[in-house]
Length: 306
Figure 1: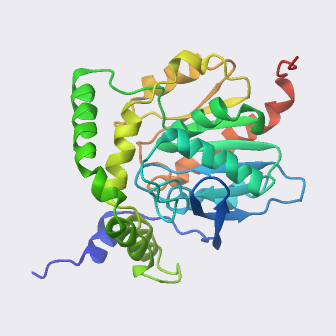
Figure 2 (figure 1 turned 60 degrees about the vertical axis):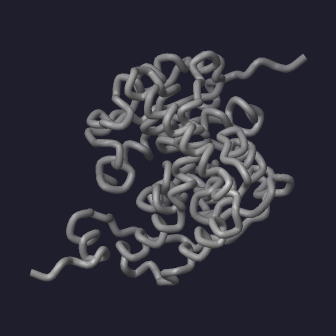
């Protein structure tokens, strides 16, 4: 029996929904140390609110969100971006969730976005929390999918993240090197294919993020802790919960929602890869969550600064 090629293995074992892949461009973020890959899909009118979508760990903006872009664009202008050390994102010396959040703030300014809702999936939702923390004046709502307020809540997680931090300290010199940067960029260009074959396209997107980037991001995620300030979030928030999630247990996701004033919970009967692998279930719930946040924006009255 002949062994299957990696491409054939992906096709046979992993379901990938078909969707139109929007064209994107590199956008310079002034003061942020580089450029990142952005897609910008218009909504039904020039006055449509905007949703900025932040991707999961080890993915790209498009790889996480491609099934959702067209359904969301029926009401929103939809923007995706590659975060630092992912895909064609900024290749900085260090990976920092704080920097990722500042990059989002810079993109909002560069594109002159108004009426902005920030949506995130997994790592992207953690960055979205930080966007509100660091740039509350720039956003009017949050959609947080498959997320938590912190890790290291049990012995296994504490050992894992402590070990990851130690490992990444040793690998930091390589991640800064020109070799690693060039390798990530070359991989992103290695399969320059039109997205007619969704599996080929997905493999290209997945390969565009280096293993060192994933490790650096994991170490940063282990240090995240937003519980002390979640109760201060003053924009309408929806939390999309995967009820079969084994990466971030559903009870943690619901606990995060309960800590945010007025947050709504939107359940999907799926696991952690629901954004793509179970897009037929996830996308309608995501759209419902985004519409709920958009409808509630007028109900939230922020305190007037003195």
